[in-house]
Structure formats: structure tokens, C-alpha cells
Amino acid sequence: MITTIDDTAPVVVRLDIDIDAPLQKVWNLHTDVNSWTTWQPDITAASADGPLLPGSVFRWSTFGLDIVSTVHAVEPGSRTLWGGPAHGITGVHQWTFAQHGPRTRVRTEESWDGEPILADPDGMRQALEASLTSWLGHLKRAAES
Image (cartoon, rainbow, N blue to C red; front, side, top):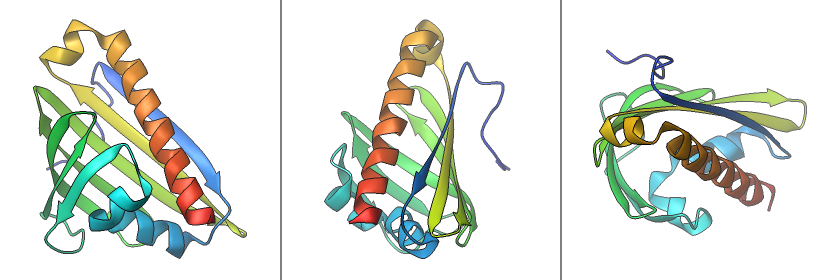
């Protein structure tokens, strides 16, 4: 059972951002997978058959990768954890949310492992950091609008 990211993976990135919006608004944007493409231009397709629940699966595409993610944990209003394989990469992605006054602190943490990662860990770390930085920025803009 997966309960968090893999801290022993060759690539681990952790980032946070403060968003000037209520936690519920940020949470709703984050957990409505079917609407990701309306505010996250790096995601070209996203579909879920229902709400994010442990054991549920959703499909999405980003940067030419078609990804099938399995949800491992959901703590409403505070945490999601999902992961899965994509093109030889095993990724585990955790998001946490906390209200701080009128702002919401969002932390994203992701681990990557697999042959493509082992072949170029520094390049893959840079790519993941750029991707997560962009995702956080898009989430901030959408939530603050």
C-alpha cells in the first residue's frame, strides 16, 4: 500500500506556494480532474469517471505523456496522493493544502523512479521541478481569478 511519495527515489521534488484564495476553492480546482484542461494548459486531456477516492483511476496527458493514475489517498480539504507508471517512469504525487488566514498553502511533492530516470536523474529532476512549478502557478492564477 502506497502512503506517501518514495523518498528513496532518484528524483524527488518538493515545492510550495501561497494562494490568495480560500482553501475550498483551491481544493475544488485541484480535485475536479475533468476541468484541469480549462485552467492548466500543460495538461491536454484529463478524465475521471467520478470523484477522487482511494482506488479510483483517472487518465490525463501532459507533455506528450499519456498517464493513468491510481488514487492512493484522499483526505478531503487537506491531501491527495496518486501515482502510477508512465513510459517506464513510476511516479507518486502528493498534494497537501492548509488554510493560513485568507490564504491557502499548497505543497506538492513527487517522486520518480525507473530506467528513464536512472539514465538522466539531473535532467529529469529539472524537468519535474519545471513542470510542478508551472502547475502550481496555473493553480494559483485560476484560484485567484
